[in-house]
Length: 195
Image (cartoon, rainbow, N blue to C red; front, side, top):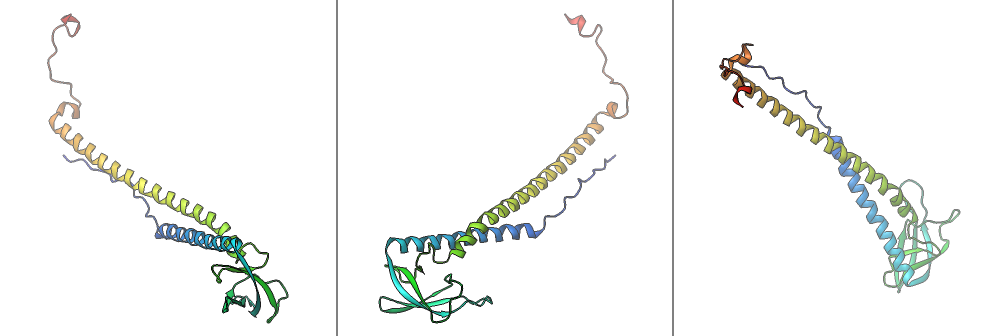
């Protein structure tokens, strides 16, 4: 006689979206950290040895993906700074005070500002914690799913082992399975008689 084993209930599959969200949130957090670090590094280099120059606005931001552009000369070479935060009412050809680092003319900011592109720093301050929280949630969900799968697999093996043990036990001991009493003979007097 063979016993029937009941398979454990199926666990729903974890969607690929959790893995994708974990990877994308990690990439976003690292990318925004690098952006913030770059802005802070440029601000430190400018603050260490600032050189003031005069720039001319050559392009205004239109909101359709184009950024502002300011042309300036540093060390006799022409340079262009993009995406600087211009004041409202700025027109093409307006002159603007700029500060650049003495050792790097590409690290430039508007006079009086802390960072070359304050919007990037603000975006990094907001998006990095959000991305880290999203990453942690995804990783916890993935770990919880994998743990549930491991437990279910272990329960399935345990059920199969118990079924085999019960079957083996049933074949070797018919007295238990058929409800009959044990066939061993009792000693006269039982345990109390031995002492």
